[in-house]
Image (tube, rainbow, N blue to C red):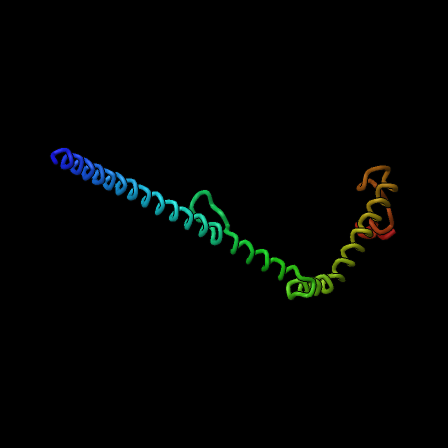
Length: 136
């Protein structure tokens, strides 16, 4: 009977020790699981919405919205592209006038170089004589 009591007490202590160790292990496991879920939540939130803290990340949703906005602005039939086309049409006369001016300036430079023996200012022509006041 004494041996049965000792065995019963030892078994009780063993069960109590197992319970305590399982409780400690369970609480550590619970903390680890909470930390893992918290990190998973933060990572998924930063993946979708971005992060302002280093390392900075735009975020998938914001990136998709930005690309969609860019695609809408670059759409051939969109308002921005229509505005650009209108500006190009409106400034076409200015472009043509500029081209005529540069062609005339290049031609004048070539004429002055040919008549001035390689130097633009060393020439004599009737226009320059008249501009200088020589009426002969």
